[in-house]
Structures are given as structure tokens and as C-alpha cells.
Length: 241
Ligand code: URA
Image (cartoon, rainbow, N blue to C red; front, top):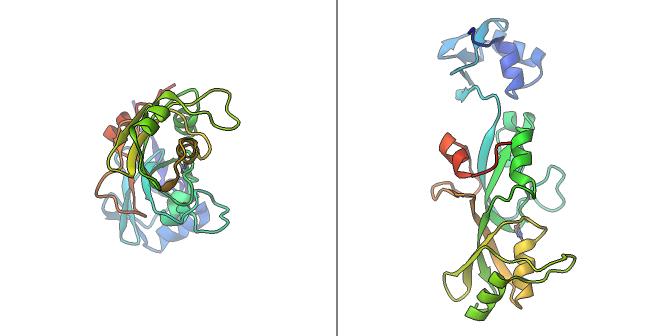
């Protein structure tokens, strides 16, 4: 079978480096190396498989779709049209924003931790549809000390305003007097804060630490992102339909 090839100007365009005219200019001005070799012909064809290219000293692998994780810092909003704080999209390189990567579910502006982004519509749907329950784990610092009765209550189910039935955490563990981990199957609006309020407590700090079996890596500093590896993707345990 012949492998798929495309001219470099189209490759750069679909990887988010600008409109085709701009990509042609980049190549003609010797700004681009492909697979380690200088390339000044915008119409030179390259196989997409295992392709890498360098622009401005940074090397990129060709990716048909983008899948990434970000360690969201506090005081960033998960939106393009922000109200009070900068956007999480400002933490990503511009080609990824141009490729229209979207975050999968939102975190509140004061919530930190693991957030996934992609430009693969089917993946976003599979990960965010309420039908496909992908568990999320949070570390929650509460204002008041948490006792066993509160934990039992959250595991049994709490009634939230505007919900038909009580919602139970899948797991809840006490890490210290004021800190618990909470695992949820749903991703309802302000769910953790509302569940903690329903047990007469209050969230003081909230961090998402895990989605499916994918943990926020300890070496991913707040504000930093990285590509999801094959094993990260399989740890998400999401339905591939
Ligand atoms: N639950 C909340 O209350 N806030 C978040 O950001 C995520 C889950």
C-alpha cells in the first residue's frame, strides 16, 4: 500500500502553522527543516508517517490529531472568551490553538490540576458524554475538619439542588483532618463544591489528580502541558465507539 504524502506547505497548514500562503513563505525563507534536512520547496512532498519538522528551532512530530494534558494553574479560565483571568489556551503553543484543541470538560477558575485537550471531535465526545462515565479523582481541602459521618454521607449520596436523585461519590478517602480524595463518575456543574457544601463543609482548594487511570504526573508543573502517550490514552479507559 502506498503511504500518504502531502506537500510541506499543506502539512504545515494542517498542523496549525498558518494559512497556506504564510506556510509557503516560511518554507521559501529557509525557516523549515523536514526530517532533519533543510527544505526550501513548499511543494516538496513528504510521507506523513514518522514525519518531523523544525521551525524556529523547535521540532514537531506530525500528528493527525492532537491529544494533550495540561496541569491547570489557579486563576486561569477554561474558555476562549474569559471574564476575569487569562485563558488556559494562552498556556499552549499557538499551532495547537490554531488547530482548535478544546478542553474536555471545564475546571473552575480556582481549580487546579489535570485537564485534557484535543482536536479529535469523536474523542472529545467519548470522553465527555455523560453516557460514557469516565471517573475523575479530586483532592479536596475543606474548611472544616472532615469526620467519618461526613464521609459516609458523601458515599451514600447527597441531594443537590436541581438533581432528581442523590449523587454518591464512588470513593472518598480522608488524607488528613481537612483533606479528602473524592472520586466521581459524573462531571456536573461545580459538583465537588456542591457535594461538599451538602455535607455542611466548604471547599478551600480543589485539584483534579486523575481521569480514568491517568494520574497527573508529579513532574508536570502547574501551567505546563505535554502530549498524551499511547499508554496515557489507554489509561483513560474511555469507550472507543
Ligand atoms: N467540581 C467543582 O466543583 N469544580 C471543578 O472545577 C471541578 C469539579
